[in-house]
Image 1 (cartoon, rainbow over the protein chains, first blue to last red):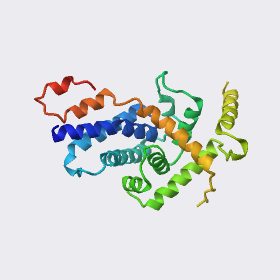
Image 2: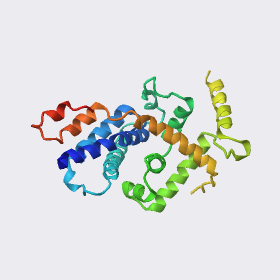
Image 3: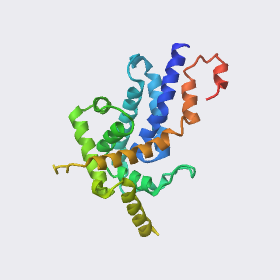
Image 4: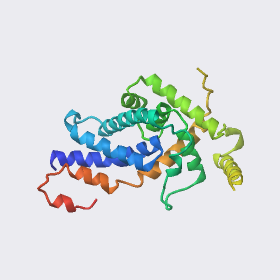
Length: 186
Length: 55
């Protein structure tokens, strides 16, 4: 296997999670895919700065995260995207889960400040350690921890998730919450 | 800054579970062709076989 072929395999393997990170971050599939494309092109153009033997995934996530942040800053000056304009464009194919719960979660996630959102996703879904997440975001480990905590606290508030230990399994609570939401929506 | 209330472990677990469900849904879609094509550029451009290999 040529060295390039090898790098390609490693990058390919990182793409699904990189893309999930991008979509979770910006809440818009098209925009996220453009971000992924830009990140990959940038990575290819800068392969020389990748240190073999280090974590390719973390390297790609760092590139994408920085692209997202600089774009976010630019965008905020151009348009205020606070009222769910992008949420309306969220298109997921029908065979995918359209469970109300996940949609509610997605919306709640979007309402978090971006630095809390990225910290929570990196640690809670992408599988990075607090240390790795701190390197990706260019901040202290303690900062990541407090962002993750604040993100969880805010989500619990928005989604009315309460400590359910007194009420038995999670499922029951969720069923009640869901039926309540369904009633409100219909 | 507003102090963050201490969260129960099952609150954390539930948020973690929903987050991963949302995330994994996307991960399971695999690698869209546009990205596979970009990365194919890494191969030797003279190597025709690499253009036809299965994804």
